[in-house]
Length: 377
Ligand code: SF4
Ligand code: SF4
Image (cartoon, rainbow, N blue to C red):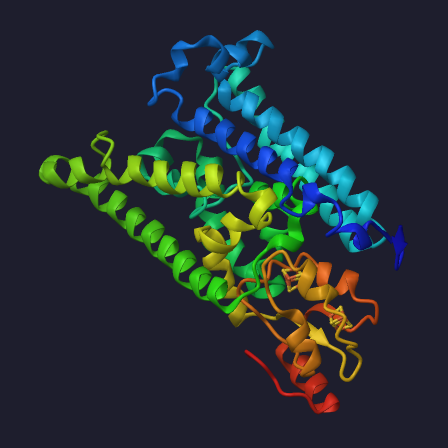
């Protein structure tokens, strides 16, 4: 079926694997089991069983470790999902470029480069992940241990480039173009984008959860700094922050945020709750960029009195934003959750919506001409 030039929109809710049918539950169970084994296989004593030990699998195909095997599978997911996405929604330049960049970043920066570094005996470095997503990158000991140019990128990318880009282009430059988590959601997760909850309850949960994780990430970074500069003077504090016990801040953050929220739940629940569970509810980077986006130039512009209330935009918004309600009330908007994927504009049969990076002056002028309220500026 070809609707508005886009294959497959019409069968979104008819295919049971895309609509919480048996296959969707099996895929979710498989993903959750995979992530549990990947992150907790050692803690659960399962690494002694060769068939359940991903390091054994990795070495069998010549890869250094389970993390490189995971990188390979992740890359296959992004490439395969990218082909799927482009077959369905590739009839727009924005989507073509966006998905091409997602795939290129994953193949080159997130898989090939770290693998080559490992093969040459170097520590792997992931240039496409910035603090606070790569939370431990700001540890003074870590910064001192990496090459100076990489340390400059780590600090400059997170503290200068990311905020400036978010101000100018919104968080889409990162969440929909560069980030590996967003890349997987955009591609492998696309078949389930319509499952994202749009209720007020889910929005309230999102606001509390994502900002809580953001504050924990920032607070933990300060604790790391304090610990590093205190040296041996605060041994009890060091034990709490980075002492190596399972309950230390560093280990707990890794378990809860890095492994459970980002992996087991964040990706495992794609087929049941949509592909942005992690980005929407728990990612500290998304929360920080969202606040910067609210202060910046990005907005979704609504053409007045054009909306026919079909609801495509709300259905296909992967962040659960009720775009239709804005369109119906002729209200252009900036939402901190919006990742600028462009799907709302893409699936709108009336061309009502436009993603724009407006200068403040032009924005006000456009609004005045249209007689529309200026929202969130
Ligand atoms: S509002 Fe539109 S651009 Fe923003 S996340 Fe939703 S679908 Fe994507
Ligand atoms: S903005 Fe477009 S896609 Fe959304 S409800 Fe209106 S006509 Fe439909």
